Image (tube, rainbow over all chains, first blue to last red; front, top):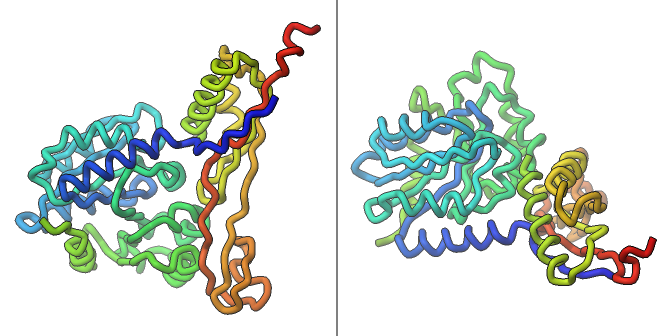
Length: 216
Length: 120
C-alpha cells in the first residue's frame, strides 16, 4: 500500500520561521542571518559594527555555537544585548531555537537583530530562521574556491562580505575568480570587501545596513 | 550533518502515518534539490540510526536528486545547471537565471499489505 504525501520535510522548521517573521514584523525589527566557516570573522565584524554604530542603530545578537558562550561575551563587551544558543553538537541553528532567543532579547529597544549561525558553510543554508536577509562571510585565508564548492550557501546570500581583505597581499587569493564564481551563482548579491580588523570597507557595509532599518 | 535533522523529521512523519494506518512501513521516497542537496551516504546512515528501535527499523529509504534548472537570458532555453560547465548548452551564454531549487520533500511511503502481516 502506497501513501502519496509530498509533504515538505522541514515543515516544522518552516512554520517556526514564519512565526519568527511575524514576530519581527510586529516589533519592526530588521533581522540578518550570518553564515560562514568557523574563523571567518563573524563575531569580530559584529563587535566592530556594534561599536561603530552606537547611537545610530540599536543592535541585538543571537549567537549560535556548538559549545561555550564566548561569542555572546564578546558581543556584550562591545555593548549589545546577546543571547547564546549552545546547540550541543548540531551544526546549524533552527527556527524554534531562534524563536526562544527572540523572546529573551529586549526587542522593544532594538532596531536590528543579527543571528550569528554556527560556523559551517553547508548546513545552515537549508534552515530558514525567519530572517529578512542573509549575510555570507568569506575570508581571504579560506581560499578563493569556496563559492564554487558551497554553491547553495552563496546562491542564497543577499550580501557577501569578503573579510580580511587586508591579507590579500600576503596570500594566494584570486579575487577575480571569487567574483566571477559568485556572479554565476548569484547575480543579485551585494558584494562588499572589508577588513573588520583595520576598518577598511566597513563604512560601505554600515551604509547598506542602515538602509535595512524598518520605518517606525 | 544537517542530514540528522532531516532524517529525524522524515522519521517522525512516517511513524505518525504508520500509527494512523496501523501498518508497517517498508519503503519511503524523499527528494531534494541541488542547493539543499543531501549526501546519500550520510543521509542513509542518519536515517537507519534514528530508525533503530522504531517501527521504521530496516525500512528502505530512496533519495531522489532533482536537477537545478536554469534559463538562458540570451536564447530563453531551459537547461540543467552544471557547475562544471556553467553556461547555456545551446548558445554558450553565461547569462542565465536559476529557476527555484526543488524543496526537501517526503514524496511517498509504502506500507506492508495488511494481508502480508505474519504471513510467513
